[in-house]
Length: 130
Image 1 (cartoon, rainbow, N blue to C red):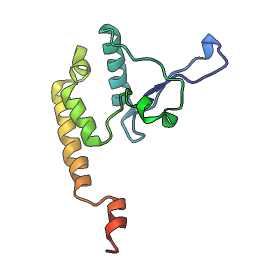
Image 2: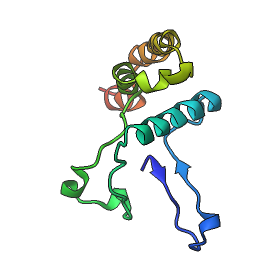
Image 3: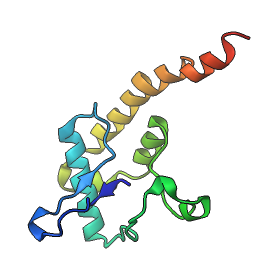
Image 4: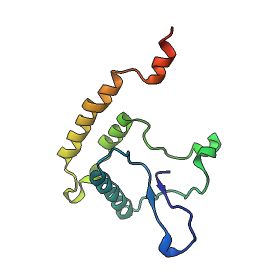
């Protein structure tokens, strides 16, 4: 789950919210800014967060999992999603279109292309002894 509200003693003052998607290597200031802008966009545009899930998502049957949206499965997919939907980040000039475009270009050139040019360890294990 992208956002988790942990079970606790039920006391209102002890409730917390966990945002579980950011990479541990990310810039925390950029990440927090983007998350807050996404939350603001959801509130202002009354975007439904969906129904809460109180089950372990890994234990769901395939038909139960079919209706759930997933986060992008790769950096390239995440960058494509950012390219297609980033207007909410530019509200009040928190991020400028130029910064977003440069970030996407940099991450594709420095990270995605570098990854694509090297075999995955599993590919190496599969084919090394052939």
